[in-house]
Image 1 (cartoon, rainbow, N blue to C red):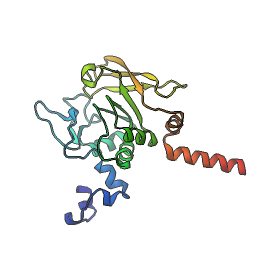
Image 2 (cartoon, rainbow, N blue to C red):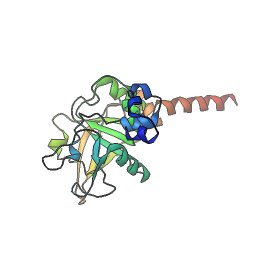
Image 3 (tube, rainbow, N blue to C red):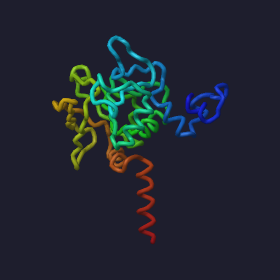
Image 4 (cartoon, rainbow, N blue to C red):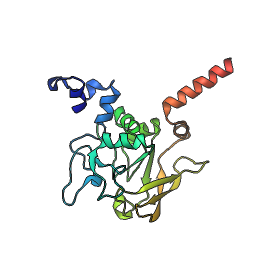
Length: 218
């Protein structure tokens, strides 16, 4: 709402996100903004804020130092510093009424991978279409069991000859320099999806094919 108010829109004219789905600036700000979202990284002691909150590690390297900010504001700081983002999630990630903007907004916020216990089927596909890597923890693993608390830096080691549904290694580094690794399954399920991912998404794939066709005709 703050963005619309700043643009001169009266609160009575806000309407729904669906009515503004052609406006990427509104929709990106609305990604992860559901009032029921509980982002554990934003928890402060026994207080768990609800809504689109996270910690901004560009302003502090540990959980104790990083301030809690709106996800959009923190994501723009990361983008300005060229830092790609990873979402760590639980079961049925993306569950709900299917919306393409759930994946579009994720990509525009700078998220390049989602590591979850499981995915909602359509949302997983949409993430691939947007060039976001979907990965699932191995059976029995979760953020809690692996001791992931959100202040780690992740390095996802994709081999050059990666295959659909391949197990890969994720390396994590804590702020104090300690490292650990775990295995995850790449939920790119087909060769076609793999091509989309390598090109950065479905739109980039289509553009690349059109350019190649034009070169052949020239």
